[in-house]
Length: 284
Ligand SMILES: C[S@@+](CC[C@H](N)C(=O)[O-])C[C@H]1O[C@@H](n2cnc3c(N)ncnc32)[C@H](O)[C@@H]1O
Image (cartoon, rainbow, N blue to C red):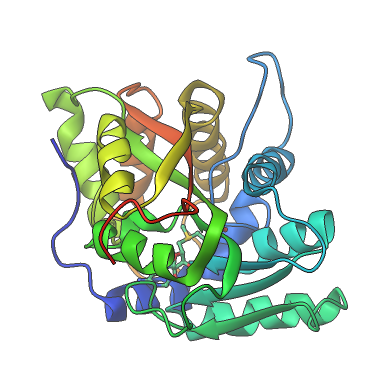
């Protein structure tokens, strides 16, 4: 079953990230995505684990100096900057949040990378780029906000050059959710403006329908989900709601939901890699 919250609009996403990006990124080590702990005994910080997840996504794209990469849902720009530093590629990041464009552009300036990495307001469902503009693209924990993932994937297909790769990192449903965990996932989706948490098994068809070829599907849940939720909830409980927390009931509901999801193995995380075939798979 697909989980998600129906009333996700571009305006609601923009409002969420305009308001919470700086605070959320501070809790998660600079980016706004789950971390990766390769070993169960690993006690790396959330920031280090977040950097590792970005490293996995970077390696999946197989890009190098001179290549152009689209970061669709760029957050604070940290993943794009790490990708650019590691590969020499140029990155264009898009987001719906003006505050994220400001934060990400300032970070690129501070790192002396603004010649190669830029950020702008744009909707991934309506990409403002000519066909074949990019040698790689990623949807790094952003597809879950998008009410029409098929449309977004078809648009990305069109702006990639043949042979280019797309990497998707996303929260997924690994197995049918037990009824007892449904309220926690519904709360999590509603408060985070998540439009859809799709079954992992549905990804190959979604990708094929967009004219892309599946390269790999990697379930990294056990190295990511419980650790990230646990670290986040521990930090939030230790700090408590701060003076800028507008709604304390919402804060409590969010933390309680994440504590439940930390022990709900049906909620997982996957990295899915696809490529644009050299000859079209679907009629143009
Ligand atoms: C969970 S954050 C992930 C940010 C970043 N990729 C990272 O890993 O740190 C989700 C991002 O997706 C962006 N987003 C959601 N829907 C979008 C859309 N339709 N078009 C462009 N960006 C979108 C949000 O603005 C936000 O930047």
